[in-house]
Length: 89
Ligand SMILES: [Zn+2]
Image (cartoon, rainbow, N blue to C red; front, side, top):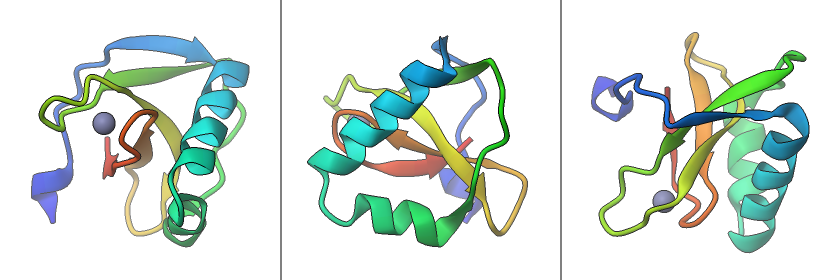
């Protein structure tokens, strides 16, 4: 499963409000995504800023946002705001 843990090159950062809005938009646009996040993560702690990353899916061009902490390890569970794909960072 380590193959889906990405390289740690952040694209940018965002405020908590921006992060929350992006994840909310992604879950609204992708059916089942909210359930997937709830099942796979524990809630994030409160931080002022969060890293974002570029989606690695070919041709997507979306930005990947922190959605929670992965239950199974210490990685951050992230979601793409365009294609809705999830991965660990
Ligand atoms: Zn994407």
